Each structure stands twice: as structure tokens, then as C-alpha cells.
Length: 344
Image 1 (cartoon, helix red, strand yellow):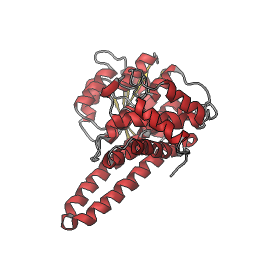
Image 2: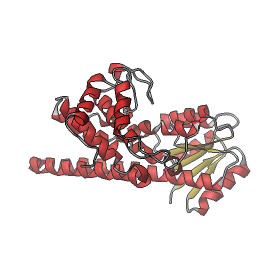
Image 3: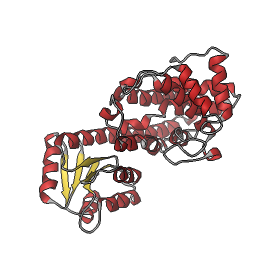
Image 4: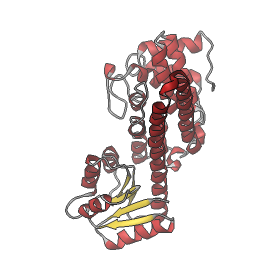
């Protein structure tokens, strides 16, 4: 399955977690300290690290920082005896994939590790795709025009596949990314902006929720209000997507657009609380399209609110949370041009 490193100063807990994961077929290594973990990480590649936060000497957060400095490509899960919003948020901001509370439940541990392994596999596939794409470019220099068309088809197919991967885990929002991409593209065209910028916006729309691959499925499909910790994890999905997409060589700032699609003009958005012109214009378009589609459609925790309610919401936020000209273009599309929310 995967190579997992378990880091904990308590031998009993360390061995128990390793046994849990070994039963799922993972190859498990153990370390009793940050120093021992770094020695293990210097050997054969590891897919997932499960580390306690509080340990004598250097902490699990120190390990996270060391791994970031070394650019180690593996997912990190923190184990904590105090699962607060601050603890979870700090760990995720530092680069952790998720957390497991103490006392450690086998079901929770194996579930989170399985999700981390899936994300690591996705990242590895993206790296392979980029390397193959670069080799393809190098090998086709003699027939440039044919190569360009082939690369365009490859990019489109890859984008569609990545978008579909999110929907497999989040069936309640199936079609959401396609509808958002279509609406964002229509707003962009209504504003008369450039076609090249529009192509990048469409890709960003198709991938804007890609980071939700890293969120446990039970949170995505939870039929009731999320807890503060669960919502803090949800708020990290733009960063997760950015971390993956920034490594792909797009002709457009797709990763930045995706990271910023929940930002708001007044700084009330997330994950970076950007304001005004600090937010890319494409992200301001995507924010309006995403809000309208999400409110108008069904969600696990509520029925669809309807298009009228969604349009009222962006109207209330016009010029404060949402870009005024983007809101105006969106309203015109639905109220004057007869646009409907539907897949391509």
C-alpha cells in the first residue's frame, strides 16, 4: 500500500499505531523523536508521516518545519491530545494533511492515512504527467503544430479527469465545478475580457475544489452543521489545491486563481484574507460564480436555496464582498439573457 513513518516518544502508542497500519498492508517505520524521524526520512522515500505534536525536546511542529525546509514530498498527519481549532489550523497551515485526536482510534487513524495515501498518489501522478508532458514537447519539436494540438487535448483531458476525481468523493456536488466554470466563462465573456485569460479561468473553474480530495469524505457529506474544527479543515482546501497545482506548468496563473476563489474584497474571505486589488480579477469572477452555483444547488446539510436567493446574496455583497462589475454581469446574464445553471 504505502510506506508510513510513525513518530511518537511513547513506545506503546508508537507500536500500536504501527500495528494498526500494518494490518492495512502498509509498510511501517517507527521513530521515537524528531531526530530519529529525520534519519529515517533520509533513507528510502516515505509516503505518509504520522507524528505526535507534544514530545520531549523537539515537537511534531518542529518536524513539520524541518520537512518543509527539506522539501520532502510526503503527507503529514499529526496526533494530538488537545484537538482544538487552533491546534488543527496551525498544523494544517504548517503543511499537515489532517489530525488524529488521542486516544487514537484505529478506525480514525486508518481512514485518515488512507486519504493521505490517495492524495500522495494523486500528487505523484501529477508529477509524472508534467514530466511526460515535458518529454513530449522535447520529442515533438519537428512537428510543432501537431504537438501543440496534442498538448491542448492532453491538458483538457487531464483537467477533466482531475475535476471528476473530486466528484467521485463528493457526489452531492457532482457537476458543481463544471457549472461554475461555465458561469465564470460567461461572466468573463460578458465583461469583454481577453480570450486567453478566459481559457485559464475555465481551467481554474474546473479545478477550484480540487483541494477537497484531502478532506475526509464524511465531512464533505455531513448532513448537519460542521464543527469549528471541521470547518477549519474545509477552509484549507484552496491551499491544498494550490500546493498541487502550482507545480503544473500552465500558461495561466491557475494555482493562484484557485487559491483565491474564497477571498472577498473586504478581507472577510479565506485562506489569506486578501483585500481589493490584491485578489486576482479572475478569482473575483470565480468567487461570484461559485457563490451563485453553491447557493442555488442542493448540499448535504440543506436543500437548494434557489437561483433568486443566490442572486440576492451577490447583490447584497456588491462592491463590498464581491466585485461590482462582476455582480452586474452575472445578474444581467440571468435576468436579461435568460441564462440557466446547467452543465455544458
